[in-house]
Amino acid sequence: MAVDFQAIIANLSRHTEFNPAELAQFTSQLTWRQAARRDCLLRAGQPTRKIFYGLSGALRAFYVDKTGRESTIMFAVADWWVTDMYCFVNAQPAMLTIEAIEYSHYLELTKSSLEQLYLTVPKFERCFRILFQNAYTREQLRVIENLSLTAEERYLQFLKKYPQILPHVTQKQIASYLGITPEFLSLIRKNQRQKSIAQK
Amino acid sequence: MAVDFQAIIANLSRHTEFNPAELAQFTSQLTWRQAARRDCLLRAGQPTRKIFYGLSGALRAFYVDKTGRESTIMFAVADWWVTDMYCFVNAQPAMLTIEAIEYSHYLELTKSSLEQLYLTVPKFERCFRILFQNAYTREQLRVIENLSLTAEERYLQFLKKYPQILPHVTQKQIASYLGITPEFLSLIRKNQRQKSIAQK
DNA sequence: CGTCTATTTGAATGTACTCAAAAGCGGTGG
DNA sequence: CCACCGCTTTTGAGTACATTCAAATAGACG
Image 1 (cartoon, chains in turn red, blue, yellow, brown):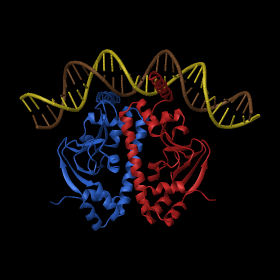
Image 2 (cartoon, helix red, strand yellow):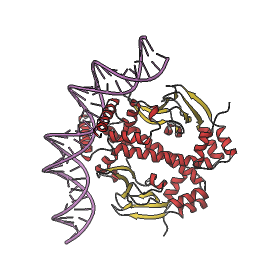
Image 3 (cartoon, rainbow over the protein chains, first blue to last red):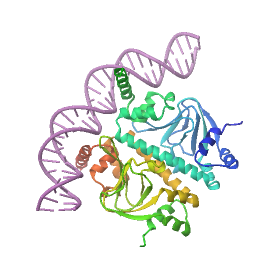
Image 4 (tube, chains in turn brown, purple, cyan, yellow):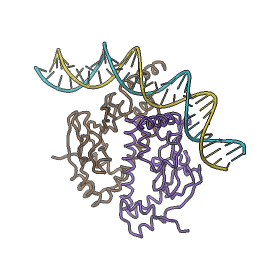
């Protein structure tokens, strides 16, 4: 079966130049998979041996606290990497659950394959150094926003920042990403509608 | 002047093995500095060309929003790296301000030196890949905590997680790290005292 | 020692949550 | 393909968590 690796190759090549042999070595380690709506790629408590790369559809990583409340850590649409990185890196059972929001295609890479790649092709160190660097700065911006913005401002920021995610997710899921209740997000949206009418 | 690089060498060597020549190349790029209480290492709006490594004392990185409210992004005591990473990486003017909380020693490394090191000694890619990986997972945990815990729980978590930071910082600074007002942190502490008395 | 800032306390307020119930919409099975 | 069921969204009332403002007290730096 000929799987189309163009998307992930283009993504890697944004940061580093690879030759065909290196790319072949990389893609040989990838497993192509599909998931139905609500399928779990990773369940909290399970070993965390894989990292995922979205091709189509949408994935969601979330944490469930002791009271059962869900906090969405990230959405992964096409061309996003996702896993429970802390547990992946430290070989711990997952804290997060990752599930398909809708029918999705994705690629899977194991921790041992990735570590092999680091050793045999050091350019992958560079490539993933840059990916982690970007991931870190993105999370740091999110911390700043969580600390300094109101729920309404965070919602508007989310709309602006992630328009490509919107078609895939429910309001309830957005609320759990923003750290508010679905009821309160509904109220925020109502207020927004009022304002946009008042503008006219 | 013989500067003591043992601490930073030990820190790097936790992740990767370097030979003496490589370490010498690294340390030759470092500048040793001291800062008095309230000195700014980086001011919001300035170019962000340097990354800092704490040796003694304590540094604080914070964001000031349009209303003048400060959000502390991180504290850096001995053996912590700190900069406005987003702006450092993307060569943007700083969003954050970094200042010394107390008289401190630190090392400085420029972006161009670091990029040179990546190219001449690829092991530094590995080393910083791991540093960024850890930084990313740490920020992700903080996002989870900010979303799923109350202010009181976040405070207790902070005490548990960063005991080495406590002696260096004021309550006001802790409050700005937790995303609450100093008055409310004061109340939380009062409630904590009540509880610990009730225990007896 | 004096001044400036941090901390505490309290009252009034605002932001966001809980609980409950109705309305809307979408996926699934018959 | 339609109808039903279940989940999402909306709405509202009452509540809890956290803030603002103000003033008194305590501490720390120069």
